[in-house]
Length: 73
Length: 207
Image (cartoon, rainbow over all chains, first blue to last red; front, side, top):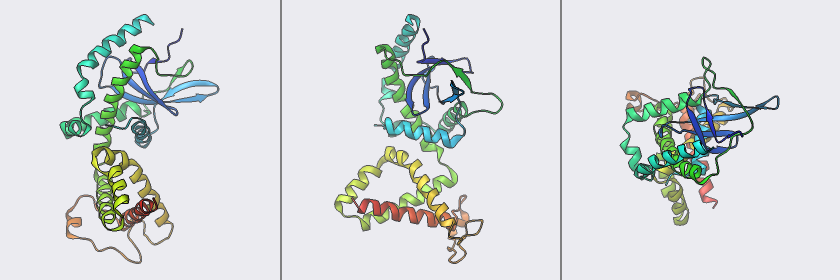
């Protein structure tokens, strides 16, 4: 059975999906509490791909969406 | 699946030890991180998230990704989300340097001044609730910069600015502190800030 709540990235580390907003996937390294990153899910020819974001501006946009959903107390 | 569940129990236990960090007052956490640590954090985060021409971050996945639903997973997610929120606040807080920091500083200074004189008491209360404090400042920063960029584009279309952003009709006098400063805002940037301040004040007035 495929478990799509965790994924191994190109760095060889396993990350848990901690949030999904639109196409953005927010990932946390299960072995390093300070290691996070963002990816986006895209569909190409009916297949699902996970890709890095285009640039810093897109990362800022994804961070903004995250903060809107999880406002810091 | 059992093995993964155990991993999350262990991770949740580790995170439980760091609850103080996860629930710490955001402002305190922000102040704790010195600039060098914060820059390292920001660089690492951007580098890990942005597509790299040399090392592809593209991978095929079977089906869609989702947030796990077991109680152990959810427990882990709760704590990781709190940590990521803190990280994002730190990164966003120091992500604006140079020109952007100067822009935001001028914008907020003018906006606060206009709010005092133009808004009534109820409007001022709403204004301060939504804009005061480090969390609001960080949360508003990205959208404020976007609004100012939009204003810049609108003003450029008037044809009143040269390619360096200097006003053709009414160039602004340059102050001594600007000459000595590292990041001098152009006439276009200053006018875009003023326009955005006016728009924001009108939004609060209309409530």
